[in-house]
Length: 250
Image (cartoon, rainbow, N blue to C red; front, side, top):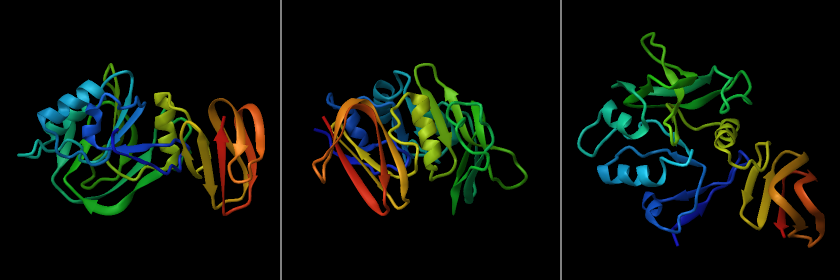
């Protein structure tokens, strides 16, 4: 078995964390969305693994700031282009990272509000700005330059997405997952955990909650043992925060 860590999702899409070497295992499961937040150094061997296992089957790949910027010996925009498929302008500066979403006619962003700005005040560099593909948001920059901060590019067998800023808001993660065809368990920004038999939701906000299941199940409350519903694809319940509800799917 590969080493994995179950992620705690606030966007309604459970995730797992793997080592890059895990991609080589025959038991590695299929995913619709891949996120490489800190893949700065990319050798020929690493690129070969990604081409074989990731750049295929319509999968969506999100690259964090600085992805592919080094081949282990030098730093350049050309190295990042080789990995991500984007052409870049690289500014050799330290700068804060923020992105303002400004295009809402793309599947990744069509459910976002008009005021979405994400990123952080942390200053670091060099800065890579994608120069081609479809720009979904503008980066906050220096020297009067207008650059894209979030771009998407159809690579034929897969889709490449590059962001100049992190962290991404939950609504944007849902957009990425939805565009990739991944299942969205819930639309609220609550904490969600799920596998093939268990789904759990925790929230600090009281109210009506909805969990969308990937199929039809009988649903049992793990804590009380009560049968909540039978033959359903949706769980609806009232939560009295702070509270966690855990359900077994049978």
